[in-house]
Image (cartoon, rainbow, N blue to C red; front, top):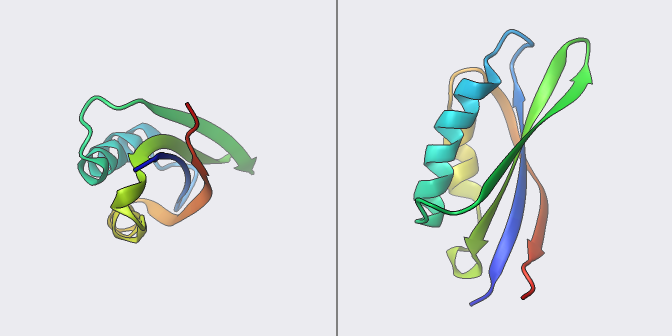
Length: 94
């Protein structure tokens, strides 16, 4: 099966929420989902408005894993997370 590159946007409940803590917890959940403890993962903090920033995480997963619904639901349950959205899915080439 091919690999897919998935970008996820996580919105915190307020500007006071520690995005690093959310990233650390999300990273563990994503690595469990992809079953890849050493896989490449990229994080980006994106300013939204009025001091609020979103956390964008990009990671690689095997296409055979299917839907990310389960990992999205687990991340949404984390303290301080308002919403989780998959913003891009692309097949890796090469």
